[in-house]
Length: 320
Image 1 (cartoon, helix red, strand yellow):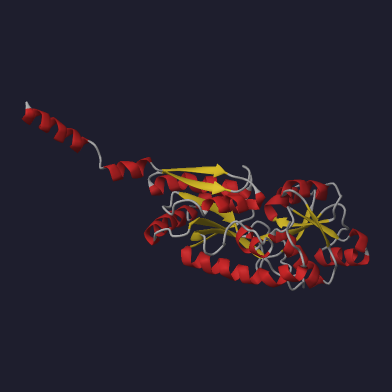
Image 2 (cartoon, rainbow, N blue to C red; image 1 turned 90 degrees about the vertical axis):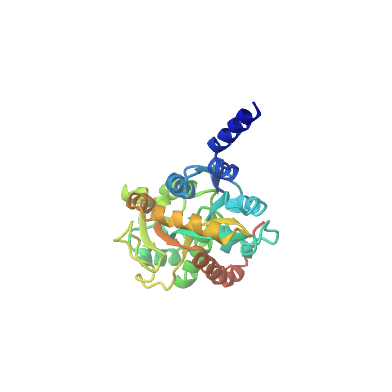
């Protein structure tokens, strides 16, 4: 009986996969997004998660943790174990703009995170509504200079990259512009369409469909090159205004992630971003699929952090 008993136990043991393998299969990778559902960060995260499920061979879900323009979720990420199972898809502003604005930021943008992959890059659209006269970017800015009481621009919020991109635009064009901050790109775009504010500086995705429908006019983009989504729209430099600004979305984990875990996730991300269907979906938001691995993302982040220090400090703006 004892022999039969031990034989049965041995057979059962062979039928059960090793604990470590079963544990890995059951684990869920969570991609956190610090914004509500429906925005570009959320959509990119969900498109990416669908592809990663197959390439990583595990469940991948997206969790929205909105608050403080993406800063709260980063503060939560730094407290997670560095096992690669909890990541944040973050816009660059929370990592390269916020450090110059907040004295009590709940994280260190360099020390508290492991850069995993750069996902996309993007620039900003300078859009005129019916509150501005007809004409190109230079003629609209000339009108604003002659009418300082109407010289204002809307953005999706104070302390954002578009906020400071607008200040750089004003400086480069020699036109004092008053910043009008909204709680999101959608309400800013609605007031632009309604004529309450003449100009808007924000991601092209906020005004692209309105531009196509003729409700507003995208006059220029802030990138070094023309946008693939707007091939007929000049850059500011092409229009004779010496100014450029761009941003990126990156995938980050907690500090201390093992290099092999980071590399494994990054490889899967690179494969996902190489899929033409995924590229087309991302480009539809006025974004550019532009993968870069961990070291390159870290270098890009550091360069943007240095780039924004001077204009932000010169503006005198301090977040509350």
